[in-house]
Length: 410
Ligand code: MLT
Image 1 (cartoon, rainbow, N blue to C red):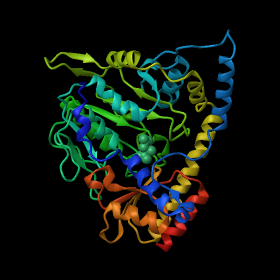
Image 2: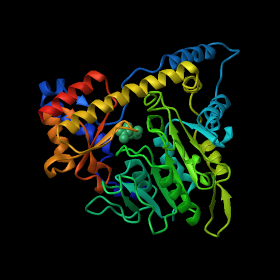
Image 3: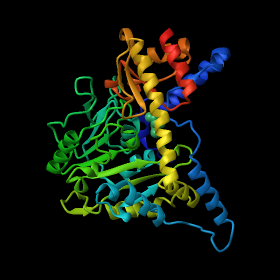
Image 4: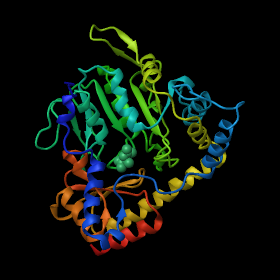
């Protein structure tokens, strides 16, 4: 008899997005006519085509694979040098941030990396997460056995939840207690909030003081529109000693289906053994990637590289302008409908208080059945998300304008 990983049995219900998909499917099967006018503003999945620069680069790469002279088999597990160099140069060194090419690890997604990073961390860490929170940070820790059982509110024993509320602008304050590992996500999924430089400085100071590790998810960095908001944790002095940064091409280059992302692990970042010896995390992550991953395909990495060409940068800027134009339409519509709205300025997500004290899932059902619009219930992101819902701005302009009309009628 094989034993299973009991930790999976602690997981509450389904993963949020499959659970939404299940409910939407059931609604569509039972209501074929309304189903035809369904607009999906739930999962943050891009809708616009891949930038032309990417497609051209990928076609060329496919052709290279079609001849013996330029064919490539296994690539480096950490990513091809051309892409690691382009990322480090454009996303970091061009902004005065010290990141070496070989501190970049190319992968198939930030979601995967956020979960996989636990492979190189010990089992006894006290983990802190924001509440509401991107569910992957929590569920992967549950799977790894780093938590106790969930209570009635869905909060897992052993995790330190840091409430993000209207009062703190949905940016958690640095706690008075110590955490060994802290997940930060800015621009934030789901609330769309951003952290100021002073707030990130406070987190870095906290991490250095407590020898904590910050896991900084910057997947939505390209959506920052306001000046002065840090795009990278490494803009903060000291972060190379306490932070890993996750970035993705999903939301800027439209790669949710194409799959490419990267993680920065500075060589100066240390963690300790139980006996108190300090070791760098970089060789551990390198070892993990070499053993469990065979790299992102050459064609996809050439596509990702093209996002940094002058044409690629212009096409990414157009995509961001499009989605943020959607966010502005949705923000206005929700505000005009008398709703309280946050986000949608530096992030493609709007965080909205449910009207009349409705629960998040009640609002989900109401939006689905009355407006035929799919949103994400805030409580799916944690108990502090109860009483809110998230609207994703990833859609066509026509669909978003139709959502605005339906919000006005609701
Ligand atoms: C979301 O809707 O929160 C995102 O699409 C999830 C993800 O990027 O994995």
